[in-house]
Length: 412
Image 1 (spheres, rainbow, N blue to C red):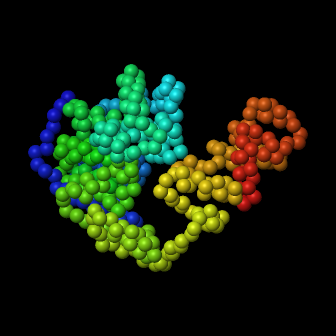
Image 2 (cartoon, rainbow, N blue to C red; image 1 turned 120 degrees about the horizontal axis):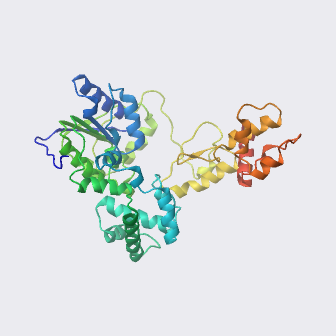
Image 3 (cartoon, one colour; image 1 turned 180 degrees about the vertical axis):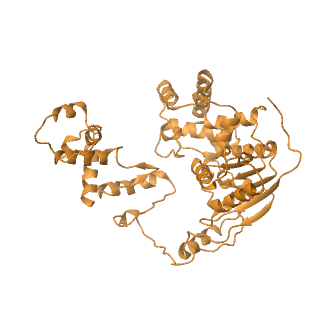
């Protein structure tokens, strides 16, 4: 197995800046299509994205002849190149074991949603430790820069030691370890490529940029396209290094027409981003058609959410809590952080139970309803001639869930 590979010539590098809705993915896939028409095999094309969703979307839309094994996230590339296995990756059981061993609640910090606002000490310690590694800082540098409340430097150091010892003793690695292994192991080589595309570049951390640079250097790629929008760099707090994107050398292309942003929103957005001192200047136009509208409200709870569909954004996760309470009080269904407000299968169980109660059950109804019942409730209603309404029979649902669901059902 080769342990060394070098790039004899510098690849041609191109930067593509894609303001919102300007068809960045479409443009990148045009480049992919052109490459295949010029004889580049699908397995010699790399498409690296920050998120799994972006990588999957690109792969799905590319319609390449043959397989496209290198349309993946940066972490996935490192997973493959280091010959990692799922069994060696730290998992849910490990997190629970670590929490029990040291009395720390890690919460969402061990999931995929980068948020620690509502979590406790353990989540904050893990976040600080991981951010130090991602940014290439010492623990003290990260601590002094972040200035966290209610966390001491000593606690950060103790946590880092315990967490490192736990991983070592159990032979497991986390996602940041994957990147570091890729950088440290001379046998962890990227695939041979002719074309490499790096998407969502504004979101990459310092460590991810090191991975990208090593991949460019060792893959043999002749053409490299790096795409993103520094004006949409919203993950700086999580380690994103948009300045690294701006500092790259190469030809520069700006996609000039948005198919999503209406004029009124465009005017407000450009007024805001023009205040950013360090950015790539961009000339682009809003979509054609209706102007859209911008309104100003004092309180998010003053909005009537009962009509239409709404996307509610906030700078910090905790700021959405009062909005969620208002939605629940008014029986309005919502999805937060990709998770529905309702317990899994609750609505299906309710409809199934009501069909059973009315004497017109469908196949699978009994199983769906019983998932929302304890065993005691299931036995209680076997053979019953008269069944109570769902909110009395489905006893796995909490009283809070029942109140919310009844309100939602009244709305239809």
